[in-house]
Length: 288
Image (cartoon, rainbow, N blue to C red; front, side, top):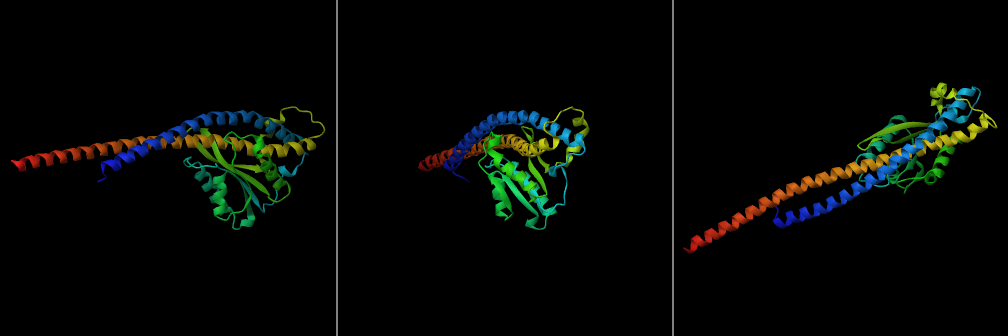
């Protein structure tokens, strides 16, 4: 049985750990509020640019662009969004497991795919498995601006434009609520799904200057980049929510452990007192 000093030491260390996890929970809750606002604020822009692009692509009929046309898939690009730090429950492991399974099922050679990682955890995961990483970004702000990832998004879209990849997918955790995040797979390029909303978008009347083709030439790369940025904002909200939930769970577990240790401490203390009384009574009886 552990000594009173050992049990008391464990209680003290657990209380200190609880203070840390409680503080981290509160910090994550504060960051979550702003991250959730950022993600929601980006939705109107994303929807409007999609409406315009869809209207041109579906309404013109004769409008063509490489980003709108499927081609033979020889190499696939995967954008994977994770965090730079741990202590976020299953936030990172769930999305990495999904990507890893997809790659193993669909590819037999590293020449058939490449990875673009946003976040240190994802980069280290794939690097440790000798999987090809074409581009990477770490140290992304908790409240990222588009400028933070503008270079990697434009370079990633350029990979498709240059024919180095033939399709591009993005994997991230979609924010549903503070306690629920869903691993999401989204096809970024080619933009073949625009036709699904063609009728709704075509009902909007626009006049294009100088021409639809020239506008698409500018808008389509921006739209593809906005999909990546929107996923990053969504993923950041999920990250803060996952970390807040994980730290709350750790705090609750610390409370339970402190209760169990306190009970053990009281029992050990009572046993020690009983033992001392027994020895005193025995000693007194021996003197008689």
